[in-house]
Length: 291
Image 1 (spheres, one colour):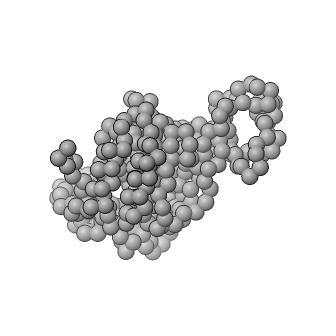
Image 2 (cartoon, rainbow, N blue to C red):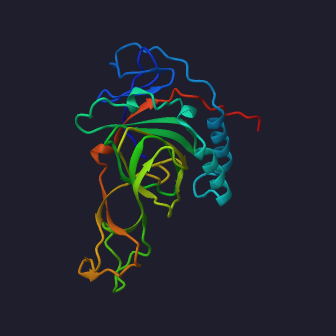
Image 3 (cartoon, rainbow, N blue to C red):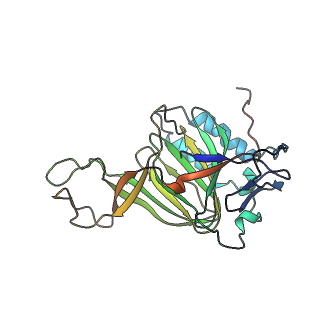
């Protein structure tokens, strides 16, 4: 998602992250804390090569063909198989790290941290770290296919897909400011669990995450967000859909039993969408494999 981030400096004694609230995210070989920008920075050696991450990277090179394309079902299965078997250690994390065992509740609004493992024009590998009660607000993924793997923690996920065409009972088109979305997911997920996939128009393309415990998520995004290429991240607020609801005086057509819907309204980037961004210092990927 689009990052309104403050680049976090690397600390003097390791390779992890300090949040605004002084919670810490760590890699297995050390820990970093946020330091003043005017201090000298000593670089630390990244964690060694991990085969699972390298396999994921190679698969992404094969699967993602660029903007306007969607992976085939066989390619989706290939990536999911790799992600389903990945562990926190494959990206330099451990459930024993202090960030995932907070001693007290966070004061103020918990802030999410992100890091990019690798990015090119066709795909991006990245991670998000959510402290308890941290939120990634409801947002979309225009023209993108996204694989998400919850590595650590427990979180609530809610997602929607647009209902098309957007029409009311008399055939008139809905207001562009308020659109109907169908709920695709609304529940709690706890690691270890299988990966999930969203597509440009299906699979819950518009979603929100709320951490119940500290969480780490690995995302595979293809193609990445790009405002220049028309793939900017948009944010929404949702309100419940009720039977016989009206819009501009028109009654909405009834939906099938068992399906749930909500009204989605585009909003400005919310304050809790702002993230801290850190350099990735976990196991690295090797780009050249002798192709």
